[in-house]
Length: 76
Figure 1 (cartoon, one colour):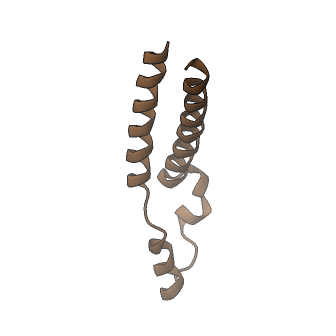
Figure 2 (spheres, one colour):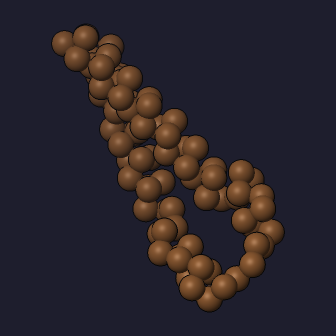
C-alpha cells in the first residue's frame, strides 16, 4: 500500500510541475492594460480557455497531492 501511494505521489508531483510550467505568466495580462486593449473573446469566455483548464488541473492535483501525503503519514 505504501509503495502504491508513493508512486502516486511522484506522479502527482510531476503533474503539478508540468502544469505550473505550462501556465502563462501574469505579466501577459498587464500588456493589455497598458496598451488599452478592450475585451476580447477569450476574456469574455475565461472559464472555457486553456488557462482555466490548467488552473483547475493544478488545484485538483494539489489537493490530491495533499491527501496522498496525509495518507502516507498515516500508513507509516
